[in-house]
Length: 509
Image 1 (cartoon, helix red, strand yellow):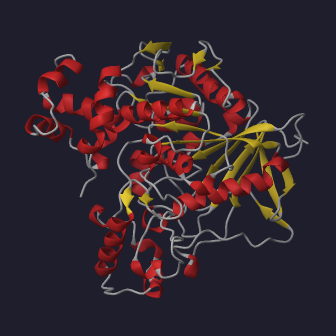
Image 2: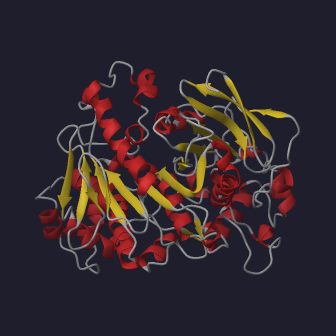
């Protein structure tokens, strides 16, 4: 079969014609739901109308409307074509008729819920798929098209059935497509791992928290999820009314809102946005994600979670001023904090900007992993916690403070070769590639083997599931391409920030 350049697979919706990329079959631009356009804007995704004949699956589907320049600069590359018709997924499989069904890894891209696309170079699924898994990446609605609330739209729902998190429902629809169809591509519908970075990681945790996602996946990996609070539905409704007024729509009807051009929303100022978080209080996310995890109410499934050493590289995009964090700590006595305590936790660092970056990093990112780990332990479900601190050999001079937000992705996907052109005069080295093989190996072993009964992941160093008593965190790359199990990693900081995180980390108003 692999002597042919094209391959045809029958799905519940119709036949797809994919192609061969080296030793892996790839299918691009597969519709997993009907176009959310016209009267379907701000509606739950609807079923695809089945097609006759063959559908070409050799080109990427369109991404949701967004800021192209912003995505090129910080989102992983050029997202390609834009359209409100954006509910497409891509799939890589090494074998459509394997001896036994393969694990499935479903990637949810990041970008603050405002930028990104499933077909970006860091997310190419061929390297992982070539090692015996099926990889799926998906587009979903972004920005106001993905998260929106307005009184006029509320009227379309029965009491308790309101939907505001359309992007999360898109992700759920993609998981439903996988349950219907993945066996035809050699995948195991009973071993599905969802994984994502940044807002993609927030999506993973939100799906862990959503009653509508139950039984659609079996484990999750959250790379650099941030601990900012979800938007309360009441606030989102106020934002929706202000947005309508911006377009001179006082007492707007749903018809008027849906008549607005699809490309009218992404250029709006941040003050009119809901922020890089979901909306809490609708049918998709009835309870805020953080509250679900702090009360151990999430789906009881295995989780891997972690963050990077220089997450502060992205804090400005979240409206977090590192120096202001320190000023607030210094000036606010009601929190019972003393700067002496903070300086002790951070080895006597006195520069407000540098200290603020580390404090904000740990409160916004590192603490989220600790909170989730404690919650998993309370449920008796395994969790693996990591800290990524590797910078490619030729780039260390431009990343003096460690791994930037998102820079771990090509190591977890093992896609360094896909990024050679982007790296320019700072190409990846053989040592970088060897390290990517090791890192991605843990991700693959999690997808293959992790279950509610697991207590370790195999690798160059066997990685025990996290427990409070041993408190072991896998550190990727502290001194070059090394692996190290760190005991009591940032323990005192995490204990403090777990209590103070909600008070100190705020969204831009």
